Image (cartoon, rainbow, N blue to C red; front, side, top):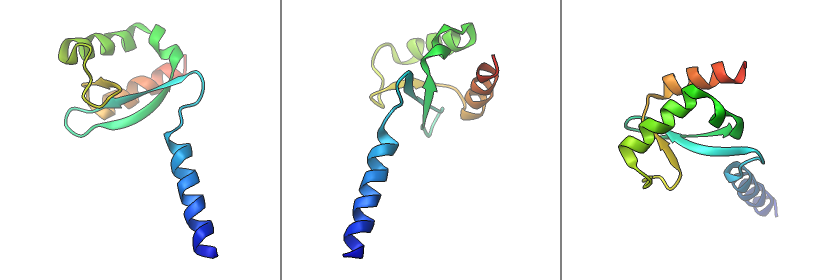
Length: 88
């Protein structure tokens, strides 16, 4: 009985981790290994984020290998940028 509960909880947590909150979207970021980020839609209005989108368009066009928007920059740069955007 306890094993069933643990398995149910694990599957439930897995489903929740795949959900994207309303007003957010996912991007994959990285030059080699890609990491998934969930970010607010409001970031799309910032010129610095739009620059990243232009880079993604130049590299991938409209075909993104991860099935979601893929941004070809270092994860450190992306985290730095999004932390700046979250303060505005």
